[in-house]
Amino acid sequence: MKKVRTRIPPSPTGMFHVGSLRTALFDYLFAKKTGGDFLLRIEDTDRERLVAGATENIVESLYWAHIPPDEGVMLSDKNEIVQSGDVGPYIQSERLDIYKIYSEQLLEQGDAYYCFCTKERLDDLRKMQELNKQPTGYDGQCKTLSKEVVKEKRDAGTSHVVRLNMPDEGVTTWNDMVRGEVSFENKLIDDQVLMKADGFPTYHLAVIVDDHLMNITHIFRGEEWLSSTPKHIVLYHMFGWDIPEYAHLSLLVNEKKQKLSKRHGDVSVFDFTKKGYLPEAMVNFVAFLGWNPGTDQEIFTLEELVAAFDFKNVHKSPAVFNYEKLDWYNKEWMKKLPVEELAVRVKPFFVDSGVDAGRLEDQTFFEGVVRLGRERANTLQDIVSNTQFLFADTLEYETELLKWKKSDLKSAKEKLTQISEFLSTMSDGEWSEEGVEHSVLAWIKNKDYGVGDVLWPTRVALSGQQFSPGPFEIMSVLGKEKSLARIGEGIARITT
Image 1 (tube, one colour):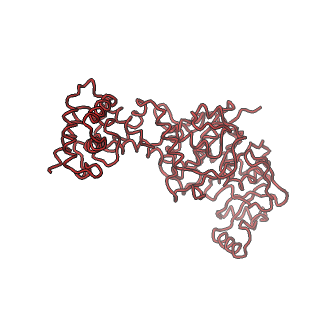
Image 2 (image 1 turned 90 degrees about the horizontal axis):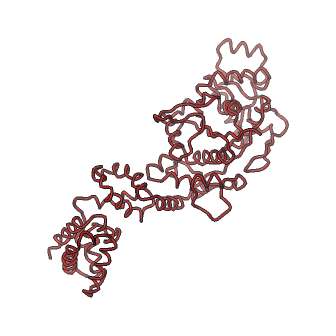
Image 3 (image 1 turned 90 degrees about the vertical axis):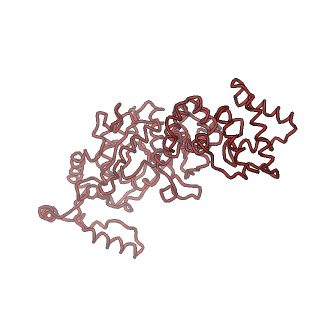
């Protein structure tokens, strides 16, 4: 029994997509569940679409999600991109000599051929096929060129590619781990380019060679690659290699059943990290995109996901990327984290928002801010937005906001003045959320005041907002001195 080896082979042509994260997660879970290895290989042969920094983003995204590769392209202890393993290099542009060897083997076997067709001819061919409502694809014009003509053209330096000599007859069939038995008629499959004119391999050759030489046993990828699989299986047969297991995962779609793409919103892992989604929540949510545990449990640690993961429960229906559900997961995970840990996670977001880092050094105050902010937050960014008023030196709000319903500003001023006088009599030892709440409510009852007549203007004076946490929560975070100062500012606003 071969040791299980899975891989994620992204192209550095953009930021790491959440769909790629889902594939990587399934690779990781399956490998860990079976005691195998998870590899990261960078497929950078599409030189025209390379994006600077994309490789770093791919690696960092996997480490952020706590699913780092066991082998391949990795982060060193110094946070630098390195390669580690016995079957590298793990970056395709560093493996060109390897692909050349196998391309030449196919040519010698007659399983590939040189094609000298120009781009213009190929464009005209496609237009004609589309006009005649025919399947588009190469017509095989160069397949029958004699050895003499091929040599003559190559000696003359004529630009050329190497194409797969796809069998015209028969059917290519495999048993997909998600879709069951899948078959394609060979005659409907194009003679795919294997080596481009620039000497770089296409995906179709490179992925086969690399997966074989890196001993990959299971290939998980999106269903958009389904039509490529027969070409790959044919190549495995041509080389005489063992064919790995294939699993083609369902599409990720939005709530409108549209394929998840940049056109419809943020889709890179980096987009979600910037908004303040926790890796635990993102991994938990993404795991359920095309899989379920067969139970009612929804909150899983990574270790629990490894234990529960079973490909029998991976389904082929499109998986809906529901942002509300992601928010729910993130909120639940923020509740699960100890406030001390959550404060560490959210601190950079406060600094980025412009809050003086020095204001965050008072651990008791800052943890109080975080505890207050997370109650109504879906993301770390929400915690920052919900609590900015706690850091303000002066609150900006309309004085009219201090009025409670049908009451007036004169009444608000009276209630604020009295509550301020009462609060000033409380000792520091009594100043906690529970202590202030108990004392103030008893005072309101004794005065026979309406609760809203007192607490509304108090809360507005403390927060400067129409909607905010309650006054007792705010006072417990601000402390006695700051709370009284803000109530005093509220009183001073009312000149009637």
